[in-house]
Image 1 (cartoon, rainbow, N blue to C red):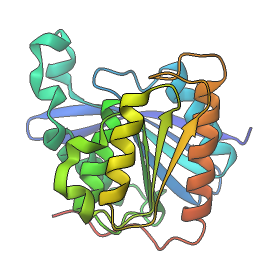
Image 2 (cartoon, rainbow, N blue to C red):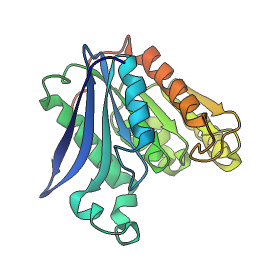
Image 3 (tube, rainbow, N blue to C red):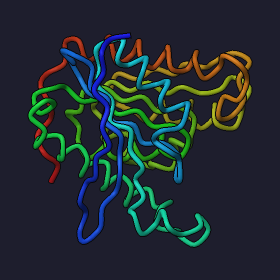
Length: 226
């Protein structure tokens, strides 16, 4: 495991902030922004495992909770805006712009990883920032992005659980609507959210391989979003 600098960060949005955890390995050659499910903890074991695997490949990770500090104080049922795909995509783009002010990361190529409801968010954000370097959408509902799927230009990987037939059907339909380099990978013997032993690790391995292949020759970070 390479030496990794880890620190908590806050990103301003209006009069509020949302939080993240930044992991930077020595000589990082790219940075992946992670949008998890609504209410997910950036310090969860699944998120931490992903950050560790990315660090081994020389990739930094910014693990985000896209709820504001006000929203995190409320029960999820009382914070419907935290489920707003467009709103959370806005915040992901804000986090992407925030990287421009970080001297250690400003020149690095950027990728997006989203899991569960965050899988939809990264696709929606990528549709608005077409020169992002790579995207991985893991589980979730890509169909909820709608016609914007055709606007994505970044190489995109859709990962699904092989035993989650409904999500697999959504992913297959989404793949047909995309005009970029796109692939669909299924994780054998896995159900939704990958609770079976070893299945999350398989999903992460596929995701890291995608980022390794597409960030190694990627251009520098994209221009700030409009």
